[in-house]
Image (cartoon, rainbow, N blue to C red; front, side):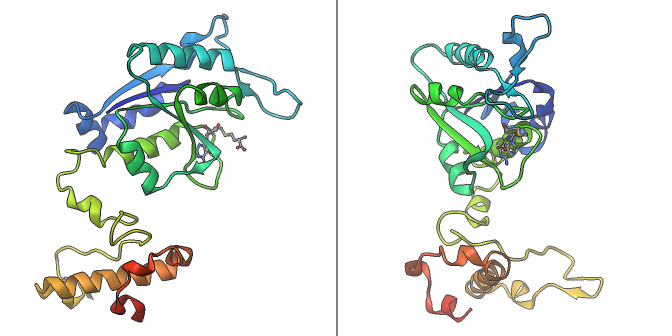
Length: 248
Ligand code: SAM
């Protein structure tokens, strides 16, 4: 997968050299290209923002600069290919595991993280007429800029790419994964030693009985979801529930 990120803080993306995503880059599974938005400015101050029409506090990022930057990045691949453009914004659709799976199927993603009060709205409208554009929010809170949101999205998407995780099954067992974990939070996990500070690992996990362990894990996932995210339980597919699920 190719990922382009245009930002006024390309240095913010240093963590993409580390851990799983860093290894995916080294192995050529993920190619990340960072671009400094200010390289497309023409004034001596390298201005990327201006006052908002209609008044009010804060500044808005200028459409001409973004337009030139996006055009230049898209042109690098020639006319045959175009990216899916992802615009982080608190007013976007929520970014979920489902969205991560959807993005992981794309060959090319282009991120446009903003600062100040965001990018002039004509930019998303303009590219929306030629590319697939998604305005996405990583949560109901407001960050100072979109860079942290891009880090979140790239990591969630990157770990889904084939060959990135050592064991592809870990993705299937994760919270929110499609299939048996859809709309469920993963339950508690344990490793050695069997007793730590007087706290024992649940006996069932030491039993070696795979069927009972799977049932216990499912019960724990259902209980945790009921306790911490009851609104998710309403979204469970009734057809996917068995009689033991209904006892919880
Ligand atoms: N005035 C905007 C609003 O209320 O919707 C907030 C602008 S915020 C200070 C600056 C930038 O940070 C946004 O344009 C976006 O790129 C990014 N950002 C902030 N919160 C975000 C979130 N929850 N999800 C995704 N991006 C976010």
